[in-house]
Length: 171
Image 1 (spheres, rainbow, N blue to C red):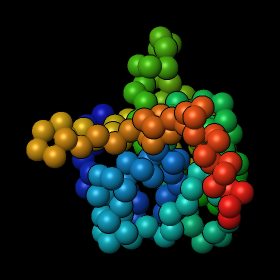
Image 2: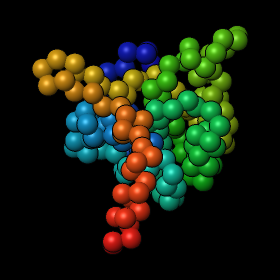
Image 3: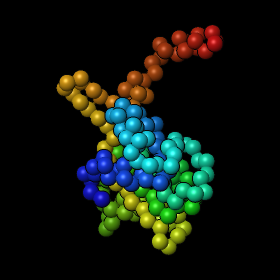
Image 4: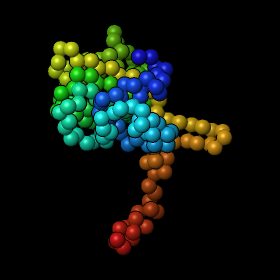
């Protein structure tokens, strides 16, 4: 798929799959209004946090929405999920564009990672694809709407620690 994915194409790709997403992607879907589309139009089997790995033996497709680089701990989580299921198809929508991963070799990094996904599925006909899809909205005019992840937009300040401790002790 191209870098200019349409929202309708993503909704169609969710059909009969399990949707896994990280927290920033969940915030994006909530604040952009796309969560309603996912729930009403996509025919997705279930929606799970990236850290949840309860097994669904009937699912044959996984769709991941990730707002982080596809490296390290993120890929370890994805690998554990894939290896514990019987998926035939895996799709990742990543909000980090491919050029930010460094200089490309002979093959694009998304192609290399897709081959890893296919290997982890362990089937000769397994299909995997990784697509760039920006999961960040900015409506600067009209209602001035911005949706970064709350943890980076509103970080916990040192002055908040005392108030949080008081709150927890009062509960």
